Amino acid sequence: MTAPESPLEHRIAMVEQQLISRGIRDGRVVHAVLKVPRHVFVPGRSLDDAYADRPLPIGEDQTISQPYIVAHMTELLEIPSGAKVLEIGTGSGYQTAVLAELAATVVTVERHAALSAAARARLEALGYSNVHCCVGDGTLGWEAAAPFDRILVTAGAPSVPERVLGQLATDGGMLVLPLGTGKILDLVRVVRHGNDFRSEVHGKCSFVKLIGEFGWPDERESTSSEDA
Image (tube, rainbow, N blue to C red; front, side, top):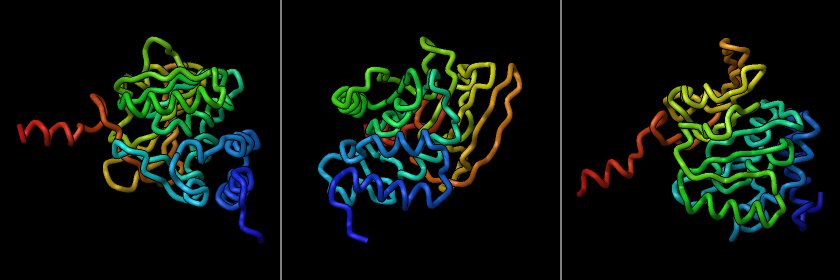
């Protein structure tokens, strides 16, 4: 097989080798990942790096997730075309773009203002008008736009943030997040019907920590306080 040369060829190879071969079956998710130019979200890297089968650093101790994990988590959300989605952890904006291909509206929250601004610029340049980028503590959700049909958390939480859970739509709302206290986390989907919340585990994963009031403490801030 000839090595891919163009961004589209890299995306086709990524989808075939990293997604479909591992069981991603939702055609809408496959099409969304195929459409979003991943290399735009990791500037300064070669195409080989941008489409590699691994997470990549994006600054502020954050990463852009492995393509398969992006697709797997998106598939678990089962996003209807008219859905309003909350994403906690904008990062580079890549996962945001994939969600925006599927949902009517995406509200995405990032605690790092610089990452949020950079992601907003990329998303606007690509023509995503259905995305609202917000800066704040994602463990609080985004009450002003609640409820949400779907919620995706893109960092590892020690427990499900109660404030976020309460912003999930009551009739079949779904939340997907990495959950646990070790290095290897459970990938959990929570489905809500009224006041009934059903949790399912869909494999293992590894993510950076979800920092915030209802997540993990910011170790960098703690270190700074101790040094002062």
